[in-house]
Amino acid sequence: MKKSQTKIIAADDPVSTRQKILDAAAETFAEHGFRAATTRMICAKAGVNVALVNYYFHSKAELYKAVIATLFENMGKTLLTIPDIVTDAASWQRAVRTWVARSLQICAAQKPPELWVARLMALEECVPSDLTYDIEEKFAKPVRQCFLRLLRMGLQDDDPVTLALWASNIQSQCVIYALTKQGWGARFRPPDVSHEEWIKRLEDHICDGIFQRLKYS
Image (cartoon, rainbow, N blue to C red; front, top):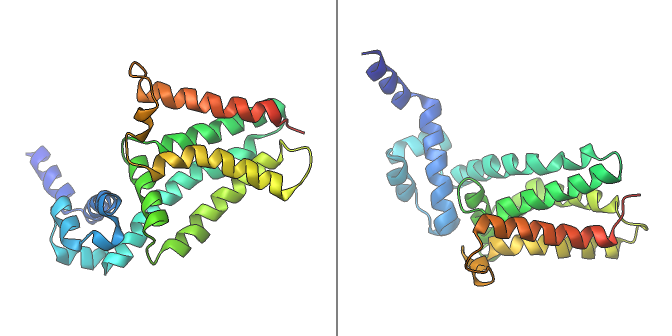
């Protein structure tokens, strides 16, 4: 009896209902984009009625804002603190490797929530929504500035062009996986190499190139 009561309480729990809507919205927006996704699609996936979406989020635009804030804040937090661990050359290399690995995990993800983040990143680049500017200012720019801070530690001079070239070169090798269709990397991956092994080898390849030319100072 207790088990059935617990299920009923959980089903009516406002927190779980709100989260159910957020999860369904993240998946729907990631699949269709903000413009093509509809509230009815989201409700059908979440198993709730439209009135609940309006109750918790007021509109599709506000729901999209909540999805972006939740996903991008969580992903951004894992990157923003990485430079703080650097105290010497060895910890700098660990920090760079952690950054590259985490970026690849997000951009080349095959499972949610990283997969949703990667797809939303791609959609905002290719089919910008009204929130593109906010996403850039609140999430993308702080992450990019944090990465520049990390790279600057390995440069012998403070030339902004050199710094920008390094940042764009490294980030493009990761972001290409978010901007292309899932499975794009399989075109280059040998048939006997798994996705996980390929991404780890790519991480090593990117980091080896960085460490050959940049040195912590």
